[in-house]
Length: 260
Figure 1 (cartoon, rainbow, N blue to C red):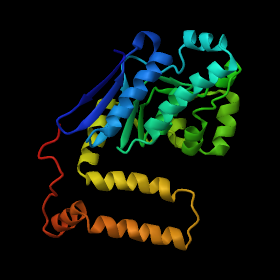
Figure 2: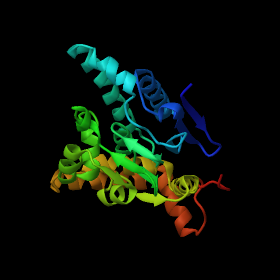
Figure 3: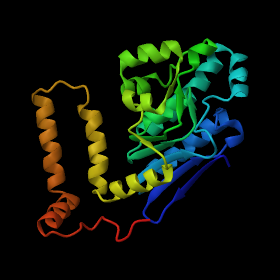
Figure 4: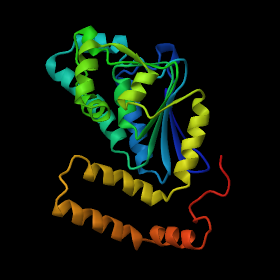
């Protein structure tokens, strides 16, 4: 299988795409595998979901042979294909778990959608990015809601239209990634340890809070909603344990005894 999912002892789901001979480009079969695997992972009792790929490059985007086959399809068939890619982006972006994306080498086209859909993204210093669709007479339509949310519409106006290749430093500046790392495995270990130190339900609740608050007007209904959210979690079992552990100067019961 090109897509694998492994669950660590610390309840972290590691999703890995292994198609290095094709630079981890995706076609209909890979997209279907990713959807199925992410949907399965979303239902698991895990603390985090890590997305990474094997080989020199994170992903070249769409597979050329798949793109050629889509060009031969009619409009309705192309809609069906595009809806599957849209579903992939949605199931990743809407995962209840904190998601971490690790990027090496080239990340082109639709690969930027996967990166933008994750909560945390780390790339190597030699990583290169490109919204390359217009070079092929296409547009980054399906990934656009996620990429624009990550980098903003002003920057999208440049990179959607120019299809320029940009480096990790620029991706960091744009907000597409959060950090540049010399060693992705060290970054993976670091972020997993950080996430495992935090309340598992609190992390998931904080993630959903962002979607509920981002872009909203600060008015009475939102103020009341946020007050109810904090009150609910304060009286929860996890909230009570966290407050007790803090006051008693001990580790809360969700923190692992040892890190992997």
